[in-house]
Length: 284
Image (cartoon, rainbow, N blue to C red; front, top):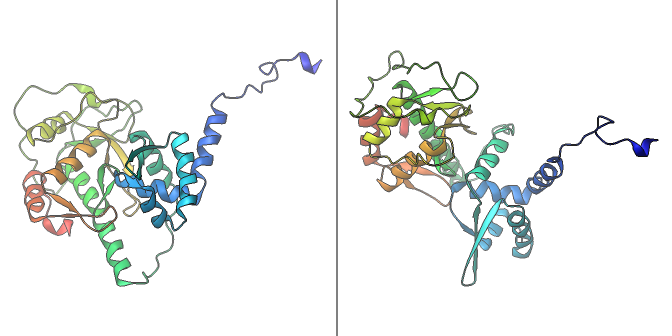
């Protein structure tokens, strides 16, 4: 009888992850919640009121949405006095949101309705943070320079391994900066297929430049993140986060406006020219 046949016997053995995946998709499949997740890619904590104004909904409506996102593990919350702050739960959630957003086809170009909107859009395209790493033309310029100097390379084989050769400067590109002396770094950067590989020279470059890398993290040292304005990958992962944090702390970049836009300072132009050979014109 059919009732005596197990699920395995019928070939209909369901993946136990299916309910969780469906629930996760349901959390993201609401436009108001999607607006909140994208806003929180700036890596900062927002109050519920700020998110409600940003999403254009009533605070009570937004509170209900935030409760679902917190319960689903996508957001973490903190309370300070009367204020409720929320942020993305961790880097894995940020990566999930980035990857999903990159699959969305860009809308046809349209003329901004106001000068302020045009300026904000131009600033975001020029340079911004993407959770905790640099994006826009700034992020692409840094990624291209790291690659041209053989400090970063594309992963060419499954498992995160490249062909074992460190790429030299691109034809016509600037000469590679001198790598700081010291023992060769371990092969910890060869983790898994994440799109980018931080080479041994790259590991030494980060150390010599005073940019602290968290080598103990389970997060990939280098990961490719598709840039939604440039439609090309920029550097993410622990190395991307360390570089962005150093750029902000050292005054190479400053945040502008109320969104994720950043601007390279004169100090940053000199530093990036000296360390990576990036011309100032590529950063403006």
